[in-house]
Image: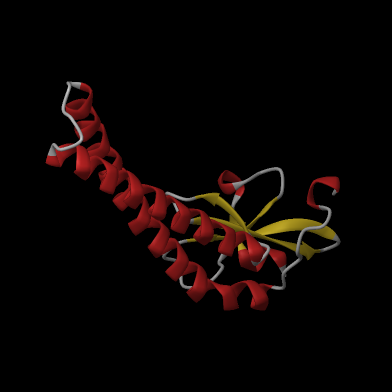
Length: 142
């Protein structure tokens, strides 16, 4: 239980109430991630043009600076969104899958309520040490 010291303990209802907000935040993170990847690819191409000897009057070099600034701004938005999730006390386990855990106590044991983006509510749980592969139906906690 040492691993979860100072972590928020959720009831099933508390965790389920966060689902709509988490869904929106994860959707935003996915969109930002795609935008950041696109900007990074553009930056690579433009940086190659710059390194080939183009000077600062070249429109590609100016575009490089614009893309770098845009990428930095999107990275900050991404970081803020991640912090928004952790401020709730839940744990983002896998961004790509949209996997979020919430600590809870059941039968005298600390376990994780396990939610995956797209699920309408929390339908699974697992022991802290088991993770996603150990997911079980929420009815087993009753």
